[in-house]
Image (cartoon, rainbow, N blue to C red; front, side, top):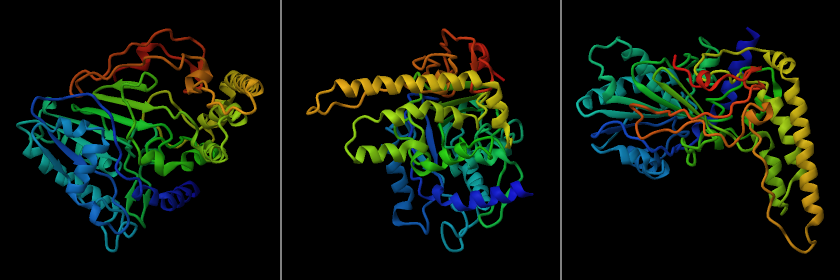
Length: 415
């Protein structure tokens, strides 16, 4: 009961971040069928709505901010799901509650999909829109609707999904209900006959929430820069070799790594405002901070539905102490290197910031190098999305799971 009350308060206090997230963007180089209608399912609208919430405006924004990918796929036009996109009084007076908004969106989506069955379609869902897609899949996929389109005529791309199995906030505590907003934690998106590409930015508040709510650093980190992460997928490149990519069944999960911890971003911004081009102390503490933050996650499998596990960070700490020592040593090395660079620079010459080693979860664990090519998203969401090219996997323990690193086959297993 206490845990539920904490979640009620947390969700209610932070829900406004959804409304200011904006339209997310995604760079994808894919195609599904020769003739395609793109069905846009946007996220929660801004408080009280504005003139800029019209379907035409949203389409124009998506056309440009998604780096042209969605619009380029619209060989047979585009369609906008004009569902309420609301969260009760938070988004406007007398607005429908979240659950009601999602239900309406799922009904509208079914109508739009039915209209495009002959030509084929891509459904693009962002944030609450991804929850709408999840609801449609539950209602119509896996043999529940004989009139549903064939698997080769429909596919989906999701960004910032609250229903991501491992990390989605709505999947962390199924059954919880927040009455003031009408939000039911309705669980994870199912795997179905339809190809789905689920793209997430690391530390997205609504799609990459810690599994251990008692890990204070993990929770503070995911809250620190929540609006700009969840609301900005503009520069995400699904072909980035540093992405963490897994394919399970017909769903491909892609996570873009955070180059810096959100928790430290305010300090980096303050340093930049003071004209500092190098930040040796911040750079030195980041490896240890990232290690401690990642203790609040279980990165074993992005497709496994993972509910809250309070206190699980302690277990992972006991299992990964060598990685903590490695993080400390890495931080010391960074500090020494950057202080040396500062000492040899002419006092009158302002040098550019040193290029920092990328401190990824894998790097802390030593399980692989940060410049790996995990996979290549090919030119076909509806067919082969992942071409695994994993090489040189080391056997040391990984902070992702608190267990020895898996083989390349298991990292890209098909469920």
